[in-house]
Length: 122
Ligand code: HEM
Image (cartoon, rainbow, N blue to C red; front, side, top):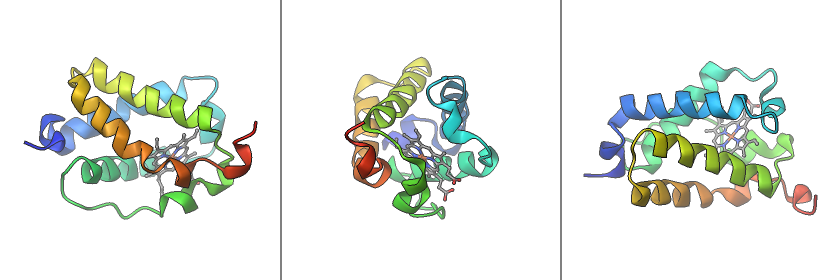
């Protein structure tokens, strides 16, 4: 079974994404990034992306990740923090450590598209 299956397919991933954004939006270091963002749309895109990277059907139709993040000035530390929130969410939901590591690696592969280059020194 793929990680997608072990996460509980669409429904399980939707639950994880909802809990993930609750964590992110209640983290004082993160919340300002999401001011004015349409969270319903963002959640839907994040679910589709996670479904795809974990071995479910490919249905992601959001923007290219570099284009979606380039205006945000995301530092490497913020990136790690967001991945940490997702890992903690999955752990809380009972996902096995090996699967969490694999999801983390799938996201880390997009690090260079998401972190803003000029923020690296800050
Ligand atoms: C860990 C890897 C990450 C992934 C896989 C990811 C994925 C996504 C996706 C799929 C979208 C939607 C794109 C669209 O609507 O077309 C998005 C948008 C967004 N992401 Fe990320 N993201 C990541 C990291 C981050 C980090 C570290 C931050 C901030 C610290 C962040 C902040 C945002 C914001 C604010 C938006 C909305 C931008 C807008 O609508 O203008 N993301 N992200």
